[in-house]
Amino acid sequence: MDEARSLARSGFSGAAIVRADTQTAGRGRIEGRRWVDAPGQSLLMTLLLPVGFAEGQALPLRVGLGVVRALERMETAKVGGAGSMPLEPGSSVSSQDPTFWLKWPNDVLVQKSVNTAEYGKLCGILCENTEGRILIGIGMNLRRLEGKIDKIVSMQHQPDLPPACLEEAWKGLPEVFSELDRAAHFVAGHVIEALLDSRWRSEYERRLWGRGSTVQFLAGHPEHSTPVLGTCIGIDEGGRLILDIGGAHQTFVSGEIASLRVASLRLV
Image (cartoon, rainbow, N blue to C red; front, side, top):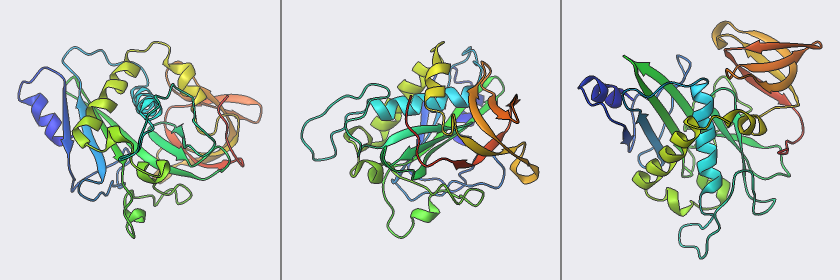
């Protein structure tokens, strides 16, 4: 992201993807949270949008939707496997295939199968605006790191959501993600599509982790947040989270879902 910012400040006005094989100062949305990787094991990219690109509402949410679309539409053929089947949004080959969820406001989770309530953090998103230029940072765990999986993502604030990787979710790395430059272009294309989609909200809500369930929500900044308990209703047109607390709907512009009180989620 720092390199992309420098590119924008140099006068470059077009769109670009800046990708790293590894990074030494990966950071998250909240100060103090770091993204730790091993060389070549993660997709680490920043998408620099062109001058004049109009920033839409709920940018991190729409980026997350684009990432999920990419994951759902990729070919299911594993490296070295035979045959392929393109996935449409919301489809699944079998109950053993992973299901992807959007954790408000900027994470992508993976559920190992529709029959289990085990979730892991697969991807984090960081959006910034520098002098009118939009930068979209995406970090996705691709390969399993034996003995180091607990260090891929710093999860000190959410131990119930361990890091997950795509290779583990699919029992093998999908072909399109086996080469990092190709993977970056594949994901970027779906992100741009989501940013231009005026009907994004309904699809996002269908993928919203915790929707219809009782959640513990940390309102505001996690370092000095207020815990509340309510039912996750969805999001409004501006991307704010809607919770039913004591029979009244309340919207939140910042915070995070800390825990989910449900045995299993299914897409509806």
